Each structure stands twice: as structure tokens, then as C-alpha cells.
Amino acid sequence: MSATERCADRSASIIRRGQHGRTRNLEADAFERHRFKKTRTHDYVCHTWFERDRAHIRLETPTGRVVFELWDEDVGQAIEDGFLTAPRVPRPSDPDWQPHAVRYALDRGLISLA
Image 1 (cartoon, rainbow, N blue to C red):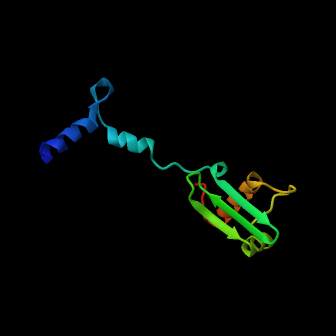
Image 2 (cartoon, one colour):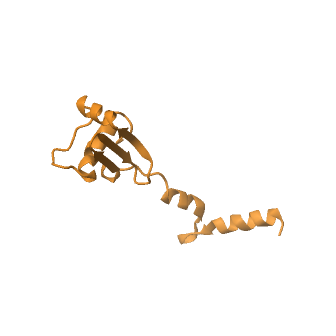
Image 3 (cartoon, helix red, strand yellow):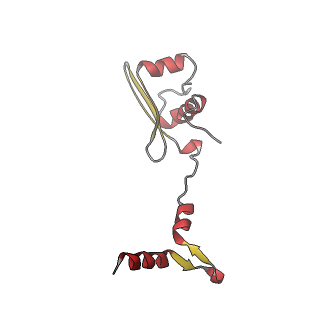
């Protein structure tokens, strides 16, 4: 099979007759289904780790991309300066920190809602 025949065969497999006799491009349909969708605030994942004089807060997208990461003095400084608020529960867990981390990222311009 020549390159031209393979190309023609591929084109024939991509374009199919849809309902009511209209043709449609299946690759374009797949692109539309998997197009970028905005991440909602409650979908972000927050990871925290605190131990004696060590502190770590990281906010990620659901796909694992890091939005921000703060270590040690940076965590304390962000809380002291009022950029990052701390949860008002004893021994806060990752879900307790999540809305505070999202607010920090929004305020710093790292993520946006619109």
C-alpha cells in the first residue's frame, strides 16, 4: 500500500456519515470531548506536612501539577503576613487546609476562577 493510499484510507476512516446523512469529523469530535475544562476550586488537592520546626503546604491540580509549594519559614511568613490563613480547628488535616490554600493561590494570582 502506497503512502497516498494509506492517507486516503485514513481520511475515509476519520470522516463518517452521521445521523441524517451529514458527515462529521471524528477527530474534531474527540477534541471537543477532551478539550480543556476549568478546574473548580474544590477539585484542587492540598498536601500538608507539619513536624516540630518543619512545615510544608502544597496545592496541586487534580492531574498532579503543582500550583504552589511552601516550606518551613515561608509557611510561617505567609501566615504572619496574612496571605495564608490557618484553619481554626485543632490539628488541621489536608482537607481543612484546602480552602485556605486555594484562597492563597487566588489572591497571589496563581489560579483564576474566570
